[in-house]
Length: 135
Image: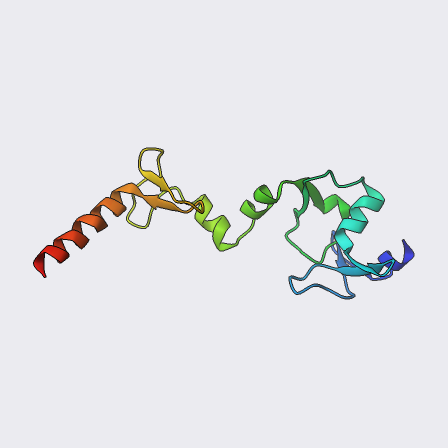
């Protein structure tokens, strides 16, 4: 436990990890020769075991923070959707680029979960086939 907390700088409410970090900015620590994520170790030491199938969300949005009171277990999908990745941004959109609402009747869900606006898709098809007829 001392090894873990010797590598922390208190920065406001966050406990900033100042040692080795992953490419994504998460703290890393070697335990029994295995690299582990520091925030997960901190949570398990001070709060509880992370429930199976859940991941930890940094409520403070600071990936280097290991303050267990900033960490909340949730599904990976929910954690991703709370973020700022392109997937999260797209999932939060309620309308397509042309302003059509993504309603149940106006949305096509593709094989890999991609959404298409049915109205825009229909309009594109009309233009495409009209251009073929002109050739």
